Length: 220
Length: 220
Image 1 (cartoon, helix red, strand yellow):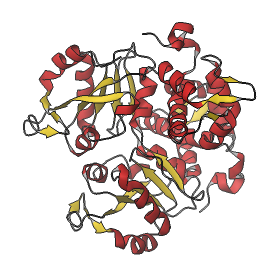
Image 2 (cartoon, helix red, strand yellow):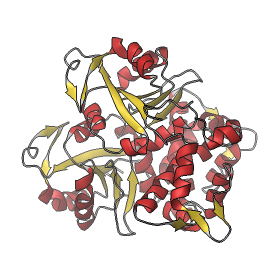
Image 3 (tube, chains in turn cyan, green):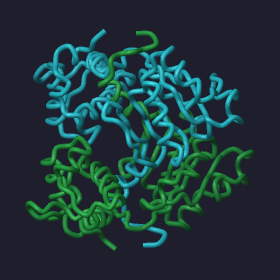
């Protein structure tokens, strides 16, 4: 199934920074929907997100007409359309490398399933960890990666290993055909251009908040 | 010490979405600096980040003149200025609530220290966890929160507890005077307007990447 977007538009035409905002819109719209809100506006969404309503309307206009002038957006409909555009109107298999503390936390994370993702395999290079239970999965050795990825047609991986191991893990993932990597290690991976990477970086969030705080440091 | 920004400008004048991009610029400029690059341009930065060079110049122009027409930006200087603007030219104390797997992972995270932050206290409500070692810290009971926050003048907290406990923890943190919360739990907190919250949400990153993938779901 192709999405509204990819069938109707040229991906290259939409700036990546716009694509990056769509999941944030979807998250907020889903909160609205779950709280029983039927209709919203770019103004309301913008106030909630700290983004201008003009920006939101411009972003969404890349993908079609979702609201009528004056009447606003149907929340449930816009959720559905964004899910289609982002291709999360289904569940993607995700493999996790790293069965340490972070891996355990991620395996029991409740935020994936109803938003389009499920961790279906956990891998670790440590012989002590292989065979152990993590969530409802058994930790597999790294040399099972290849079979797993081709069997599940898994394109998405999470790297939850120490910084010094992350690049090697990324190289392995690319070798077996993974196309998108979410990296929790505090390093910048070197990857071929056809592989997507995103980083979980708590400091980006801290630094956004400290801007608004009056300085209070340990050694300033 | 006040930052260049807060001394020279009205915070309200700069859109929050611009502030949110500054840490991303700083992260990339720091990578450039650490790789020995002396000079960069809004074009180079933009290509690296997938943001238009005009946007980057516009964002930075809120805070002053950082580059000369044609000669580009001095990387080290711009890093220093952004660190000042974001107030991370120092180390902020951060308290962590939740000594589970995620808490252990965060306590040993190597990405905080040289970017302006240090976890200086870990708290948990479980009697089994209190008194235990996590990283180089001893897990404290929740009723120590108040003393800790006033003693360290700690304004920033990480919530690393299960979703069903997160709101109560947030309420406690606000009561003792925490002003900024980074929440790892997959819920949306209800908070008074004077408290900042950011969420670590891996799904936002996944959904950004699936847009570019050809659909390959478990049950699509």
